[in-house]
Image (cartoon, rainbow, N blue to C red; front, top):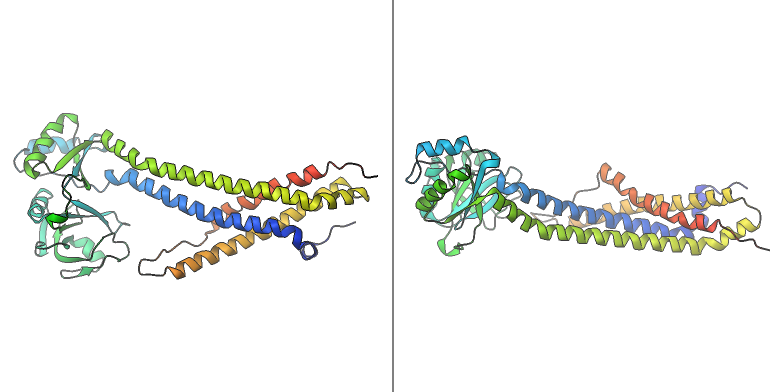
Length: 365
């Protein structure tokens, strides 16, 4: 006897395939959201791993404590493997325009002129900040965002990770720093390092650089070697790795429950039916093909249902959180859809254990 067509099977076997359809559907949706969460964690780890070592400002100047020849020696040895990281204590660091990695430093008014001089920055328009949240911006950064002297950047502006609105009061030229703003001294936390500045050099230059920093900035900075930075990164990555492990365990447990559950459901729903087919003369090959095809169809329906459910959930979340900042959750890409195919494939293959077990029919007399 020829097996029923796919559509005839679906119409007559809703009760049998529904548990598997629901299982695969939920598994696809859960896997997508868990994988998206994992991507966010990995993004934080990757950013943390490179953040202190790129887009750093180089402290180079000719004030007391370091000579021009010292600077030349430091610059000649300023490769990444021979760099130091200076951690500023009384300064707050913001990542402005995160897609470009621009730096915005909020400092005390009396330190702004020192930073400008040390960084060889020149004021090209406007004035120096005189009150909190007034900033100087690099003229190229300002041009990229259509900003000028007097412009206000609100804290919810996309791409600008700032805690309060800032007002542009001046523009400058130079390298290394994208913005400098004034912060009230009472709001700074003495002894709490907030940002880093890279200083080129090797271990022999460490004492010279330390003397220069202490004299110029009144010991408000700490010098870190790359080994120390690595240790800080490991301390940061530890909780992230624990969270990643936790999500992975949850993922394995969820899928494990789904796989075990669906196998038991398939076995309980089909055992008597398949034994009866064997008893009335159907071959083992026909019975196996029938069971595998039914499970495969249920898996495909569940996969498509899961994709639709996930897209609807993403759309609903984006609509509900459609604020100025928004969540902006990405829709499913073709690559993600292909990856999620592993879910119905795994569940379908696992579910085939039931029909294989059920084909060891006992004789019915």
